Image (cartoon, rainbow over all chains, first blue to last red; front, side, top):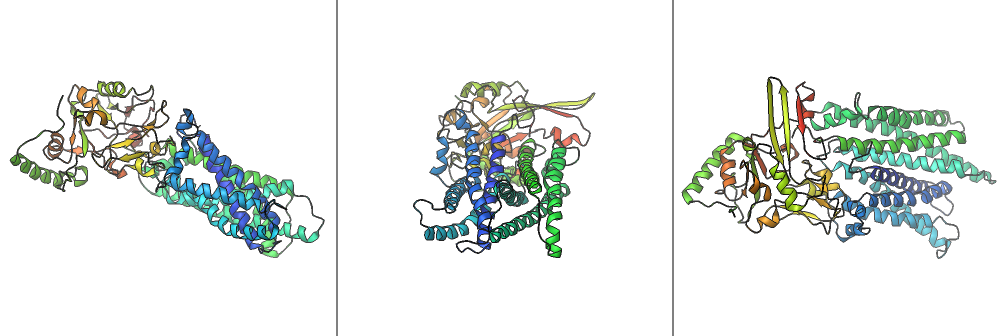
Length: 321
Length: 251
């Protein structure tokens, strides 16, 4: 569906990947700080997954953006560096600098999780990790929010021109960040001989899943408000929102793909596993297979959200001339 | 070589000012240029264009002149003429809407440019793009409510109408104005109350495109048909817009 659009798959991929990376970084640093930031905090193993997962999606996403540039398409491979010659109030300019700092912090933050990291003695490594955690949380949130502000800054694109779009992207980023950590844990983790470490690992799993339940619930609310106010208003925004409402060209993809498969199904499955512990303090047990399927579905939903929003914004415009 | 500004005497100026104020009260102040509103001009020109749609015959001479002037690549348009057909036989109408960059007072494109490659010139109000700085991110193309911008497939940078800056700076009129056989286009200084454009704007009902976008365009229309196929579709009226561009629909 992206043929002939100014912003196609590279931009969609960027919005998704940068969201996942920023979410993973925020979640990782939050888990680390919450688990007690001493040498071996309670959630340090889970935080390590997030720290290692964060930098690559963000960097790959930004790389994709360069492929979409008009200057790159005509062979000016390095003209994008002009972005670094100024800073102005364009969301893209602020975003460029923000992403640069975020990438830098995410790489160093990940490095502090490397055992026996060359050039970084352990005591300095832990101190640095702790300091960077405090930077990683706001930077990850800012990166996730910025992608929504970038799209939302234009009255000429009424579908995007909503103050709640940035919040939607933030919640989706955090949710997909949790999902990618859960997925990596489920795929890679081997049972630890140390039962204490294993208990911590299960506890982290519960916190992640419970957080994701809350985040998806919040995301459903944000989506509801986005659609409801689009429906209740008049003019450009009302016309634009029609593309995802009944009869619109993106309606099936939006409702079946994003809302049902990407939000409702995973939140119900997660609730099923979270509720017994939340309500009756029973043991939290989630099968590996379920964790994998739920995470994949959440990531799929996050991608579909970017896909639908990017297309919907470009096939709609102000009404009248 | 025709002069951009038409001079005239003091008495006429005072007359025009009075007429301008009277028209402003009747028409809605927002659609009138600063000079007509009686604001202080700072001595610099503020170039604008008035298109009298009643005089347009849809011949596309302006589109062709623009293509020739800038060697605009195939598939891209700085200036174009839309045909608007509406109604059902025997109650039908057809009108033309010449389109170009509106050189807005609040250009949405400039606000979003991350490299500073596009700006509104303080000396004459023309919005320009520097293709040596522009990286082609397409943000401005999205931000323009008039679809006036495109990515030039040769330079890879954003491109659009600049009121023929190279001609205007030499005292010539833009190519589309000079070639218009119906004299539908008037180009001039909106800050000069005696210019042809100011006088015509002051004495005619004029509109701008998509006023609700808050961009304050400097391209004015007389008798433009603002019908849009998306706008009227749900009212069951037939309107068909032919854009004559690669982008077949207005967005």
